[in-house]
Length: 396
Image (cartoon, rainbow, N blue to C red; front, side):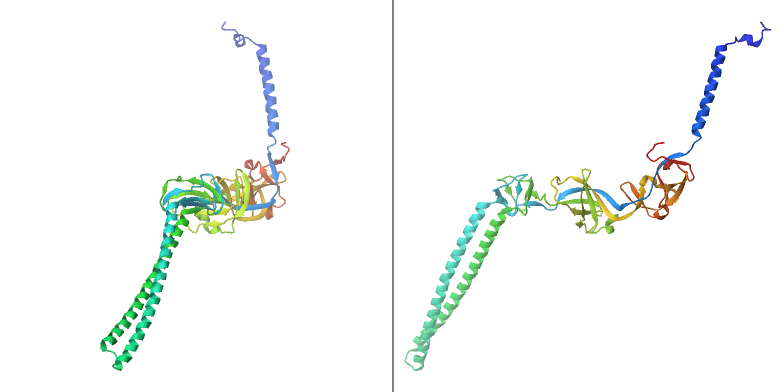
């Protein structure tokens, strides 16, 4: 056994050998096919050329739709609320009576002041008659005095008669002065009564609260029969026919906006309108470092106050040449580049991007790219000089 050949130790298996040889041929063939496929190392790309379109420098913020006219309606006269004619959801016209407070007491006060004025006017008329009588008495007393003085000078009447006539004349003079004073006092009382009547009428008018404009009642704070102090909130109403969009933006943009700045309003994924700013806050909030802007909106029956909307503020807008934003690649040092197809090679070209709008980037130095086929797909696999194969729309 020790002299037996080595091959006899491991019996020969022809089937196993044949299998190994076939596997070698198969693997050798696969390797050659893979090498053949890898022989073409071109990067498949899609290209496009610069296209003219409108570009914007813009800010996108979220705003809220609100009424231009919104008011809290309070009681101007304290008292019990009566004649409450509306409730939440009521639509009213300008001038419609909403409610009234303390109506009966105020109406009675007007009546009392009217009567006081009438009494003062009649009293004044009586005093005028007294003045006329006083003047008549004064004229009579003066004549008596002058006659007695003449007779006294001729020693026809006694000194006592003369003195009595003089006293009567002086008393008549004082009676006229007194009657004139009473008349002046009566006139003042009439003016006072008229003022009180005007105040009573004003209080009665102020107790009647009317709608300041066409609108809808959105909130009701008090019910009919409840007491309302002066200034107590009773209703809230708004005019839903005149709406505006409001938003707060960073103070960094304060100097760039004006009432000529245009905005585009989008609501529920659709463009609602394009308009201009109608209001810019005169100051910046010191805590949030933001300021408020507003823009009036056209009448839209499907808009609801308080809902959110997307606002695009257009700071600048111009026409220019651009390409899809993904084609512009960031490079070291704050530079940007695109790839152009030159023959079958990729050529990296430094560009100066401008505004970006709707997925496109403006190219400011577009002159050197005019007529070039620019890579818009596959650019992330390229280096300057990479082999490329244009496959626009073919996939081959």
